[in-house]
Length: 88
Image 1 (spheres, one colour):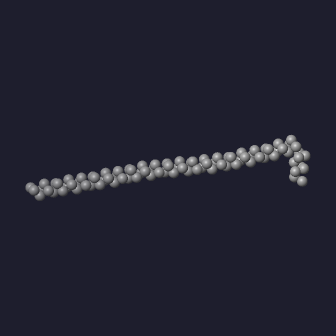
Image 2 (cartoon, one colour):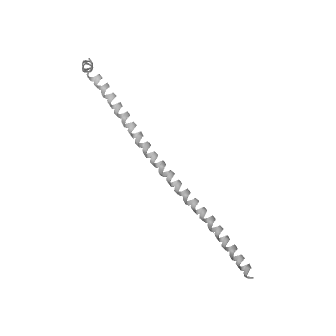
Image 3 (tube, one colour):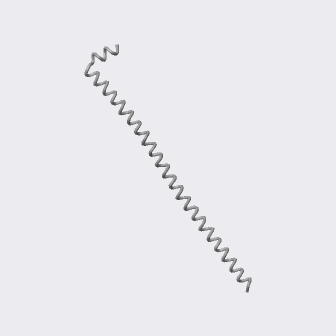
């Protein structure tokens, strides 16, 4: 009778250990997945920020060059003699 009780007790301990182990693995996988997902989103946000900076620099350069080209065109239109005299 005592051996039967010990055997049942061992089975319960084994069952509890297996369940605990499975729950632990599930929990670790779940937390790891959340961490990876958050890290990926943070990386995407950083990349979007860097792309926006690059885009704004390119736009600023284009606007500056367009402004300079329009200024030269205006100067040539207003004072064509001044432009010819300066270039020669």
